Amino acid sequence: MNGLIGLWAGGAGALGASGAVLGWVARASGRMHHTGEVVERIERLLEPEGDAPGLGERLRALESGQRRIEAQLKPNGGASARDAINRLEAGLRDVAARLPPTPPP
Image 1 (cartoon, rainbow, N blue to C red):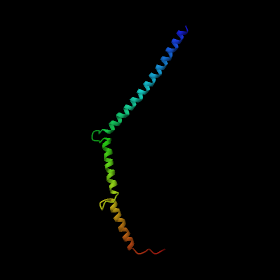
Image 2 (cartoon, one colour; image 1 turned 180 degrees about the vertical axis):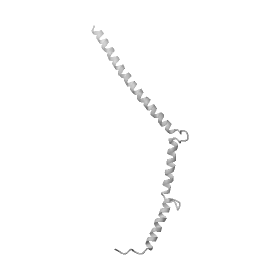
Image 3 (tube, rainbow, N blue to C red; image 1 turned 135 degrees about the vertical axis):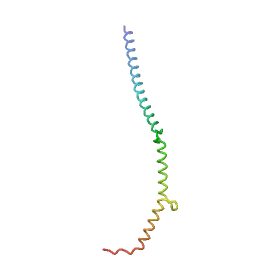
């Protein structure tokens, strides 16, 4: 009789443990399915759709524009916006030096 109770108890324990494992597997597969959906969404963003460029192409265009803007902020011998600002500042200094001093109030 004791052996039969032990057998039932062992079977119930094994059944409970396998239920817990199956529950964990079900939850894990649900998370994996969600992860797969996220990966698919990211892949769709990377690919061009119709006339719209994909994310990779958009990032390359942004980086290219950033490089062009940065180039304008550095003096390069006369052609950059920084060179034009430097010329304007020098011209204003020359004009200010030619003006008569302002009398005190």
